[in-house]
Image (cartoon, rainbow, N blue to C red; front, side, top):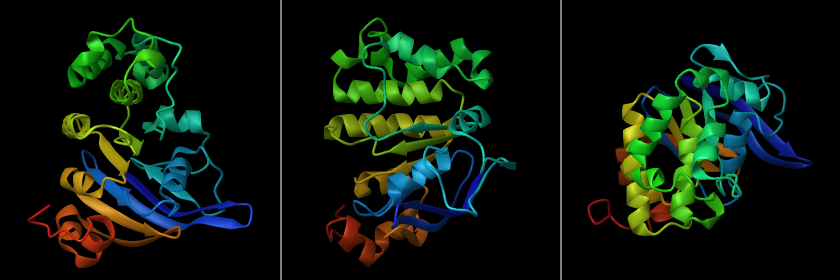
Length: 241
């Protein structure tokens, strides 16, 4: 469904990303693992059209070339993003944030159904629809951010560090909701520092170092790889993890 190649990003003289390539299928969860500064966030922003790329970028979604589209048209094409830090409107209510998420033309006809789906995924939001988002907990705000992105009726959802700052209990709740999102046919591309939980959630993964994709495989294969265990799982054996 999503096929990217030759994606490169530079900030001045610094090359943040070099010829990145990956795929995400329908209803598939793919995780990107890498250290801080490896280029994970730059990759998601490049795919979403938020940062300019060097010539040669190819981003294909369901056969449509998105490589030269601006960010708002990429959302219209079916690719939504939940950035690190959530990017929600704190002075607006939960209901208003969700309504803004349904602004793309592709989502307007199914707004009521999408809203019901979001509230089914995150039942506590149903109790807080009139609440101003800045007064909510970090976990609840993350639910709002993901819910707002889902309101755009995406085919692919990009998530940058969705579990950052959340308690283990909320992380499990959040990842359970992402499994349900996958079951609707939406593909998820996930950047996560929590390698153990994300590999347990994902179907496949990519490893990124110094702006380059250096490895890939099924989540199970990556969990079993000694180098991946040492780098991302604290050296813990797969069975113990």
